[in-house]
Length: 159
Image (cartoon, rainbow, N blue to C red; front, side, top):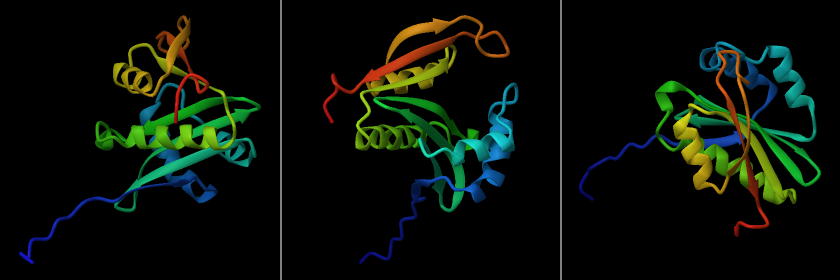
C-alpha cells in the first residue's frame, strides 16, 4: 500500500419520494424559471402509479431528477433536470439510462420526449441514446423557443 487515498463522489440514482419535493422544488424553480412545476404538481406526479420518478445524489446532495410516464407501450419522459454545478458530468446520462431501463422492464416500445430546440447538449445526448426527431412544436416554450419532439423505438434498438 502506498498510503494514497483517492476520493470520488458517489453518484446514486434512487426513486423519488414525497420527502424529496422540498429539495426538488427550489431546483425546479432555478432551472425552469419561466415555467416551473408547482409543489402540488409534484405531489400529483408522484401519486400516479404509471409515473416513475428518480433523483440522483452526489455525495448525499440531490443534484438532479427525472421522470417518466408510462401508458401501454408508450412512455413519455416528463423531465430531466440537473443542477447547474453538476452539468457536464454524465449525470443526465445516468438518469436517462435509468428511464430507458425502467421502460424496458415494463415492456415499452416507444419513448417520447420534448426538448428545447436550443438545448444542443441535451439533443446530442438523446441522439446518442437512439432518439430521433419526429416533429417540432413552434414557439412551445414561454420564451418562444420551439420544442423538438423525439422518439426512441425500442424495436430498432438492441439492449
